[in-house]
Image (cartoon, rainbow, N blue to C red; front, side, top):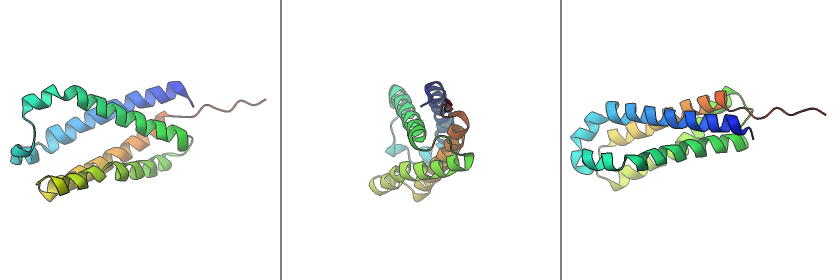
Length: 139
């Protein structure tokens, strides 16, 4: 495993996830959240839980990149797209489950699912571009 590239890909993945989550949830989905305010924590409660969110985003990036490094590394960018689709589909199951257990509009669950899938595909591409296995030495 190429540890410097692994660390770089994890850090880049965390920054990417945190940034895109801010755009997705803090901008694009904010009208949906405001329309369903009774379902969510208050702003002050959310602020108190931000460290947990960052930890979850870091764990997501670390796991995503580690699985890539163990099984897909050395593949092409198109493999990164496929990997992102597979991991995104696996990861976004939570959006469907939340739709079942929380009385929310189906449009919100759909937006969660699709934005998470796109986010995972982009993360797959980025991981494929950043992480490279160590070159085999001859001899």
